[in-house]
Image (cartoon, rainbow, N blue to C red; front, side, top):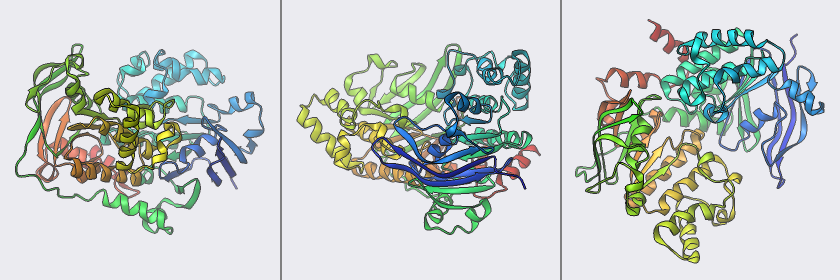
Length: 534
């Protein structure tokens, strides 16, 4: 009988304050099999994934249990011995490829580093293998792709390159940590198909960490549900989807099912337009990223901008806030023309348009307290005293549903959902009229994401805020957007009331986006790829 390639027994991980992050975790992984780890933010998914390599996050330590790879307890190895296992026997694919690649080195140099270092391949052989993998994973110009730097390729292409880098030394195990979270739905399908191909072709055992139950259902043989560092349920994928036993697992399944249901949102009869972007064109160098795009946002309204990676969603947001200058077109906000450049806008113009970023982890300074983070815009825009800043900060914490004592904590000690609430509070501190939300829930698990969406809607109702939401998650669009604009390669291909956009007849690209949203069925990925191959 085949033995487990990875075995984790009674794993316990604590932070330096003694808080237990992972409590008595146990799992076994057989060669060629995939175990999905799913659960809320802070459940311990990534912590267990890193512990499989005998790593602990900064400020954390493994205080109990053991990790075996092919019968070897890796905690008992020397630092040099553990280094020989990492990359060679077990590899890691991070959530954000853009943050994980070294921007100063070419993709080829980084893909070849591990096999050369471990003596698996010489440099010439490693380069030839890499080119073949670029071709297999359908990356553009495979012979020259490796000569590019990370910033010169799209997010989906870089994520595929990271998967290639992970298997470059022929590891037995790969930890996939949210590898498709930051990708649009069409690119996500491509990456999921290619990950399945790599697992099958190289007989890789994998831990697949995600907060999207429908995604993990396409990859995993078994699913482990985690909550607050403890295992809630471990079953085959089919049993988790169709007959979950534990209440929390049932809640996850039900929430994912309801996210697919379209909610009709009542449009206001009298639209008071506050933002009018008319015939916007923009360039990055000689490349035209926006082509004659027009959208409007009314007071108290949510407008969603959707489209695949590279469609121009974030470029449009950058034009609106002045980070990218428009080449042509008119941008009017509250009846006044906005200068193309941020530096030429008044302080009041800056105050009234605020941003909530995609990744709260990198949007907050880990060295600053929550009070400093939220208080800075209060002092900058309103010149309040220290006591007034603190009082207003406490009001904002209450408004976003966080305890008052968080004011003296640092963001590094908070969960993903709590960090995103801090980002929302920071945006509210400026008392804006319009908030641009750039993928505000993509880094969050589905239950925490639902809490954030409800919070945004509550604040909109109470304060009359307007939102421009950039997202690739059509479930979010269905829930909160009054109107939707669909971008493709910098052009507006559909625009109107969300209810109309999501009802046939569709624009062909809108239909493709809708079909690309993963469904809660194990066979969905095979069905959609077969349909597209016809």
